[in-house]
Length: 210
Image (tube, rainbow, N blue to C red; front, side, top):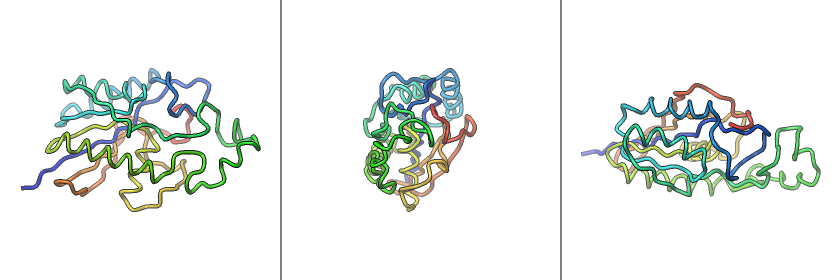
């Protein structure tokens, strides 16, 4: 008999970031009021689902997004370091194109290889740790559904890895809106489908603070 399990990779809600920095793994960046509403929308979207396990990145915004989901299903929240945001040397700086750190020649050597990328955690490393986290969640929720709350780049990198696409990409074309779900459907331990939904609506991957 085939056991069907679904792992939902949920991106956190909007973050309060008035100065527009790349906050990455920095502490103290929690959800904005809109982000808190988005977290509630995701919880309402999943209220009727057979959620048996919820786990989140250790970062505040992911933990806050997971809270309403655990509350609605009366579950405890686990934390998995492998779901954390990608490491980035521009953390704490403004990095919009034509603005901030990217205008300084001293930072240009860090941009030498966009295929790795040279400014942060290698894409293949992100994909492997996210895949490990997803399979751990699948095991915890076997026969039911799991929720993993993570971040845009890690979720998108894992999806491209699973779809057999190159890992380097145009960040402006990521399909991973705020509070979106990238759902991995398994039959036993075999991945059979990937589905994407936006219960809180679409958001631009170019917006700082997202």
